[in-house]
Image (cartoon, rainbow, N blue to C red):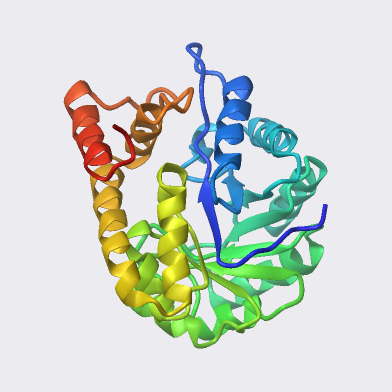
Length: 293
Protein backbone atom coordinates (compact mmCIF):
# COMPACT_ATOMS: atom_id res chain seq x y z
CA UNK A 1 0.00 0.00 0.00
CA UNK A 2 1.43 3.46 -0.82
CA UNK A 3 2.30 5.44 2.28
CA UNK A 4 0.38 8.72 2.36
CA UNK A 5 2.64 11.37 3.88
CA UNK A 6 1.59 14.71 5.28
CA UNK A 7 4.22 16.51 7.36
CA UNK A 8 4.71 16.96 10.20
CA UNK A 9 4.31 13.27 10.97
CA UNK A 10 3.30 12.30 14.51
CA UNK A 11 3.12 8.59 15.30
CA UNK A 12 2.70 6.81 18.62
CA UNK A 13 3.71 3.42 20.05
CA UNK A 14 0.34 1.72 20.38
CA UNK A 15 -0.46 0.05 23.73
CA UNK A 16 -1.59 -3.57 23.57
CA UNK A 17 -5.00 -4.28 25.17
CA UNK A 18 -5.45 -7.47 27.17
CA UNK A 19 -8.62 -9.22 28.26
CA UNK A 20 -9.45 -10.57 31.74
CA UNK A 21 -7.60 -13.80 30.89
CA UNK A 22 -4.45 -11.83 29.99
CA UNK A 23 -4.76 -12.57 26.29
CA UNK A 24 -4.35 -9.96 23.56
CA UNK A 25 -7.82 -8.48 23.04
CA UNK A 26 -8.04 -8.00 19.28
CA UNK A 27 -11.62 -6.74 19.36
CA UNK A 28 -10.68 -4.02 21.86
CA UNK A 29 -7.60 -3.21 19.77
CA UNK A 30 -9.75 -2.68 16.69
CA UNK A 31 -12.10 -0.38 18.58
CA UNK A 32 -9.19 1.58 20.02
CA UNK A 33 -7.72 2.02 16.55
CA UNK A 34 -11.06 3.30 15.29
CA UNK A 35 -10.91 6.02 17.94
CA UNK A 36 -7.37 7.02 17.00
CA UNK A 37 -8.37 7.14 13.32
CA UNK A 38 -10.45 10.20 14.19
CA UNK A 39 -7.37 12.04 15.53
CA UNK A 40 -4.45 13.77 13.77
CA UNK A 41 -2.12 10.81 14.42
CA UNK A 42 -0.26 9.88 11.24
CA UNK A 43 0.19 6.23 12.09
CA UNK A 44 0.72 3.46 14.61
CA UNK A 45 3.97 1.90 15.85
CA UNK A 46 3.45 -1.68 17.03
CA UNK A 47 5.62 -4.10 18.97
CA UNK A 48 7.37 -1.49 21.10
CA UNK A 49 8.27 -1.06 24.76
CA UNK A 50 5.05 0.91 25.23
CA UNK A 51 3.20 -1.97 23.57
CA UNK A 52 4.81 -4.38 26.08
CA UNK A 53 6.85 -6.08 23.38
CA UNK A 54 8.85 -8.19 25.84
CA UNK A 55 5.61 -9.73 27.10
CA UNK A 56 4.46 -10.68 23.59
CA UNK A 57 5.38 -13.65 21.42
CA UNK A 58 6.47 -13.11 17.83
CA UNK A 59 3.16 -14.55 16.62
CA UNK A 60 1.20 -12.22 18.87
CA UNK A 61 3.12 -9.26 17.44
CA UNK A 62 2.38 -10.33 13.87
CA UNK A 63 -1.29 -10.84 14.70
CA UNK A 64 -1.42 -7.36 16.27
CA UNK A 65 -0.04 -5.84 13.06
CA UNK A 66 -2.68 -7.66 11.03
CA UNK A 67 -5.49 -6.51 13.32
CA UNK A 68 -4.37 -2.88 13.19
CA UNK A 69 -3.95 -3.03 9.41
CA UNK A 70 -7.49 -4.36 9.04
CA UNK A 71 -8.93 -1.77 11.42
CA UNK A 72 -7.03 1.10 9.83
CA UNK A 73 -7.92 0.14 6.28
CA UNK A 74 -5.02 2.13 4.87
CA UNK A 75 -6.13 5.38 6.48
CA UNK A 76 -2.90 5.67 8.47
CA UNK A 77 0.39 3.92 8.07
CA UNK A 78 1.65 1.09 10.24
CA UNK A 79 5.18 0.65 11.54
CA UNK A 80 6.20 -2.66 13.15
CA UNK A 81 8.94 -2.60 15.76
CA UNK A 82 11.96 -4.92 15.74
CA UNK A 83 14.54 -5.06 18.53
CA UNK A 84 16.82 -8.04 17.99
CA UNK A 85 20.59 -7.96 17.37
CA UNK A 86 20.53 -10.71 14.73
CA UNK A 87 20.27 -9.49 11.15
CA UNK A 88 18.80 -12.83 10.03
CA UNK A 89 16.11 -12.72 12.72
CA UNK A 90 15.39 -9.07 11.97
CA UNK A 91 14.80 -9.89 8.31
CA UNK A 92 12.60 -12.87 9.22
CA UNK A 93 10.43 -10.58 11.33
CA UNK A 94 10.42 -7.87 8.66
CA UNK A 95 9.09 -10.38 6.14
CA UNK A 96 6.38 -11.54 8.55
CA UNK A 97 5.33 -7.97 9.34
CA UNK A 98 5.26 -7.01 5.66
CA UNK A 99 3.03 -10.00 4.94
CA UNK A 100 0.73 -8.76 7.73
CA UNK A 101 0.51 -5.37 5.91
CA UNK A 102 3.01 -3.26 7.86
CA UNK A 103 4.11 -0.27 5.77
CA UNK A 104 7.49 0.09 7.50
CA UNK A 105 9.62 -1.54 10.16
CA UNK A 106 11.21 0.37 13.03
CA UNK A 107 14.61 -1.20 13.70
CA UNK A 108 16.62 -0.46 16.83
CA UNK A 109 20.37 0.07 16.51
CA UNK A 110 21.91 -2.98 18.23
CA UNK A 111 23.28 -2.11 21.64
CA UNK A 112 26.79 -2.86 22.91
CA UNK A 113 28.15 -3.65 19.46
CA UNK A 114 31.26 -2.35 17.74
CA UNK A 115 30.88 0.15 14.89
CA UNK A 116 31.83 -2.61 12.44
CA UNK A 117 29.15 -4.91 13.87
CA UNK A 118 26.48 -2.18 13.73
CA UNK A 119 27.38 -1.44 10.12
CA UNK A 120 27.38 -5.14 9.19
CA UNK A 121 23.94 -5.53 10.78
CA UNK A 122 22.46 -2.72 8.69
CA UNK A 123 24.37 -3.82 5.58
CA UNK A 124 22.06 -6.84 5.66
CA UNK A 125 18.90 -5.33 7.13
CA UNK A 126 18.42 -2.14 5.12
CA UNK A 127 18.57 -3.59 1.60
CA UNK A 128 17.01 -6.88 2.72
CA UNK A 129 13.88 -5.44 4.30
CA UNK A 130 10.79 -5.75 2.09
CA UNK A 131 9.48 -2.42 3.44
CA UNK A 132 11.19 0.90 4.30
CA UNK A 133 13.19 1.07 7.53
CA UNK A 134 12.91 3.60 10.34
CA UNK A 135 16.07 3.51 12.46
CA UNK A 136 15.64 4.12 16.20
CA UNK A 137 18.38 5.00 18.68
CA UNK A 138 16.74 4.52 22.07
CA UNK A 139 19.27 2.47 24.02
CA UNK A 140 17.78 2.58 27.56
CA UNK A 141 21.40 2.47 28.81
CA UNK A 142 22.59 6.06 28.48
CA UNK A 143 25.38 4.86 26.21
CA UNK A 144 25.10 5.72 22.50
CA UNK A 145 24.82 2.69 20.23
CA UNK A 146 26.59 4.38 17.31
CA UNK A 147 28.42 7.59 16.45
CA UNK A 148 26.57 10.54 14.88
CA UNK A 149 28.61 10.04 11.72
CA UNK A 150 27.67 6.35 11.41
CA UNK A 151 24.01 7.03 12.14
CA UNK A 152 23.96 9.69 9.44
CA UNK A 153 25.59 7.35 6.93
CA UNK A 154 23.06 4.62 7.69
CA UNK A 155 20.13 7.02 7.37
CA UNK A 156 21.38 8.18 3.97
CA UNK A 157 20.99 4.71 2.49
CA UNK A 158 18.22 3.72 0.12
CA UNK A 159 15.20 2.09 1.79
CA UNK A 160 15.57 4.19 4.97
CA UNK A 161 12.53 6.36 5.65
CA UNK A 162 13.73 8.13 8.74
CA UNK A 163 15.18 8.15 12.22
CA UNK A 164 13.87 8.29 15.81
CA UNK A 165 16.07 9.95 18.40
CA UNK A 166 17.25 8.87 21.80
CA UNK A 167 16.36 11.01 24.85
CA UNK A 168 19.82 12.66 24.96
CA UNK A 169 18.97 15.79 23.01
CA UNK A 170 22.55 17.06 23.16
CA UNK A 171 23.84 13.95 21.43
CA UNK A 172 20.95 13.87 19.00
CA UNK A 173 21.66 17.46 18.03
CA UNK A 174 25.00 16.20 16.77
CA UNK A 175 23.31 13.31 14.98
CA UNK A 176 21.06 15.80 13.18
CA UNK A 177 24.13 17.32 11.55
CA UNK A 178 24.69 14.07 9.65
CA UNK A 179 21.17 12.77 8.89
CA UNK A 180 20.16 13.96 5.40
CA UNK A 181 17.41 16.55 5.20
CA UNK A 182 15.52 14.19 2.90
CA UNK A 183 14.98 11.79 5.82
CA UNK A 184 12.40 12.13 8.59
CA UNK A 185 13.94 12.99 11.94
CA UNK A 186 11.51 12.28 14.78
CA UNK A 187 11.90 13.40 18.37
CA UNK A 188 11.03 10.64 20.86
CA UNK A 189 9.76 12.51 23.90
CA UNK A 190 6.63 14.55 24.54
CA UNK A 191 8.60 16.88 26.79
CA UNK A 192 10.99 17.71 23.95
CA UNK A 193 8.65 18.38 21.03
CA UNK A 194 9.27 22.09 20.62
CA UNK A 195 12.97 21.96 21.58
CA UNK A 196 13.34 19.07 19.15
CA UNK A 197 12.18 21.20 16.23
CA UNK A 198 14.86 23.77 17.11
CA UNK A 199 17.51 21.17 16.39
CA UNK A 200 15.78 20.05 13.20
CA UNK A 201 13.14 17.47 14.15
CA UNK A 202 10.33 17.39 11.60
CA UNK A 203 8.05 14.90 13.36
CA UNK A 204 7.67 12.83 16.49
CA UNK A 205 7.20 9.29 17.79
CA UNK A 206 6.28 9.16 21.47
CA UNK A 207 3.71 7.59 23.79
CA UNK A 208 2.10 10.96 24.56
CA UNK A 209 0.71 10.88 21.02
CA UNK A 210 -1.71 8.19 22.19
CA UNK A 211 -3.06 10.36 25.01
CA UNK A 212 -2.97 13.80 23.39
CA UNK A 213 -2.53 13.41 19.62
CA UNK A 214 -3.95 16.82 18.72
CA UNK A 215 -1.77 18.59 21.28
CA UNK A 216 1.39 16.83 20.10
CA UNK A 217 0.60 17.54 16.45
CA UNK A 218 -0.03 21.21 17.23
CA UNK A 219 3.26 21.59 19.13
CA UNK A 220 5.28 19.99 16.34
CA UNK A 221 3.40 22.01 13.74
CA UNK A 222 4.19 25.29 15.48
CA UNK A 223 7.83 24.33 15.85
CA UNK A 224 8.34 23.22 12.26
CA UNK A 225 6.70 26.45 11.07
CA UNK A 226 8.91 28.55 13.35
CA UNK A 227 6.01 29.72 15.52
CA UNK A 228 7.86 29.09 18.76
CA UNK A 229 6.06 31.65 20.88
CA UNK A 230 2.69 30.15 19.95
CA UNK A 231 4.00 26.69 20.72
CA UNK A 232 5.45 27.43 24.15
CA UNK A 233 2.23 27.23 26.17
CA UNK A 234 1.25 24.02 24.39
CA UNK A 235 4.66 22.54 25.07
CA UNK A 236 4.29 23.31 28.77
CA UNK A 237 1.03 21.36 28.76
CA UNK A 238 2.69 18.47 26.94
CA UNK A 239 5.58 18.49 29.40
CA UNK A 240 3.21 18.42 32.34
CA UNK A 241 1.35 15.42 30.91
CA UNK A 242 4.62 13.71 30.01
CA UNK A 243 5.88 13.99 33.58
CA UNK A 244 2.66 13.10 35.40
CA UNK A 245 1.90 10.03 33.28
CA UNK A 246 5.36 8.96 32.15
CA UNK A 247 6.66 8.68 35.71
CA UNK A 248 4.47 5.57 36.00
CA UNK A 249 5.77 3.95 32.81
CA UNK A 250 3.55 1.82 30.61
CA UNK A 251 1.05 1.31 33.42
CA UNK A 252 0.66 5.09 33.64
CA UNK A 253 0.03 5.43 29.92
CA UNK A 254 -2.57 2.70 30.08
CA UNK A 255 -4.23 4.27 33.12
CA UNK A 256 -4.51 7.59 31.29
CA UNK A 257 -5.95 5.91 28.22
CA UNK A 258 -8.42 3.99 30.37
CA UNK A 259 -9.63 7.29 31.81
CA UNK A 260 -10.07 8.54 28.25
CA UNK A 261 -12.28 5.55 27.40
CA UNK A 262 -9.86 3.22 25.64
CA UNK A 263 -10.36 -0.49 26.25
CA UNK A 264 -8.21 -3.30 27.63
CA UNK A 265 -5.80 -1.01 29.41
CA UNK A 266 -4.56 -3.33 32.17
CA UNK A 267 -0.86 -4.20 31.73
CA UNK A 268 0.01 -7.81 31.04
CA UNK A 269 0.74 -9.74 34.21
CA UNK A 270 2.84 -9.73 36.30
CA UNK A 271 3.13 -5.97 35.67
CA UNK A 272 0.63 -4.32 37.98
CA UNK A 273 -1.97 -1.70 37.25
CA UNK A 274 -1.77 1.58 39.12
CA UNK A 275 -3.56 1.83 42.46
CA UNK A 276 -6.45 4.19 43.08
CA UNK A 277 -4.39 7.11 44.35
CA UNK A 278 -2.03 6.87 41.39
CA UNK A 279 -4.92 6.81 38.92
CA UNK A 280 -6.51 9.79 40.66
CA UNK A 281 -3.29 11.78 40.32
CA UNK A 282 -3.35 11.15 36.57
CA UNK A 283 -7.06 11.96 36.41
CA UNK A 284 -6.37 15.32 38.05
CA UNK A 285 -3.78 16.25 35.42
CA UNK A 286 -6.05 15.14 32.58
CA UNK A 287 -8.81 17.31 34.02
CA UNK A 288 -6.53 20.31 34.54
CA UNK A 289 -5.26 20.09 30.96
CA UNK A 290 -8.76 19.71 29.53
CA UNK A 291 -8.45 16.15 28.23
CA UNK A 292 -11.26 14.90 30.46
CA UNK A 293 -14.07 16.82 32.12
